[in-house]
Length: 121
Image (cartoon, rainbow, N blue to C red; front, side, top):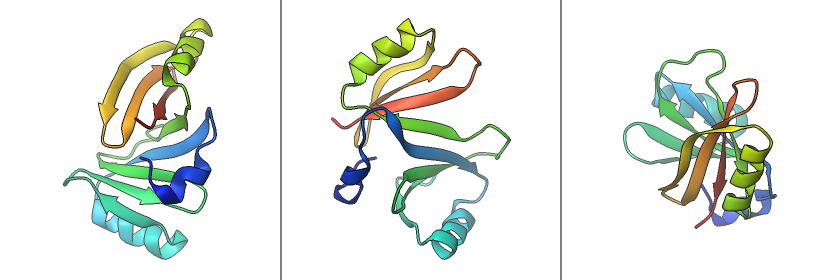
């Protein structure tokens, strides 16, 4: 998720990345490129990442439904943030795992909303 143009967006424990579901990645890329000048990087046939001026994100193949956006926060200390989430009453849905560009975990807040936190490797 990290690249040199997004490093100025890496503010500890702030929303930095959004993941959307899309039934047509090419259509989503055309729309968001034309609407907001987002640029895209494909990571295989089922995922494309976007880069915007103030936020980054991605689209994964799936059927869009209300509530399907995954909010991703950035952390300078993933383990510490994970501990704080658990102590505050969050539950870990996907424990820390690696992906191209870093590591992350996903959790549910007390209302059941799922969010993720990532850190560069």
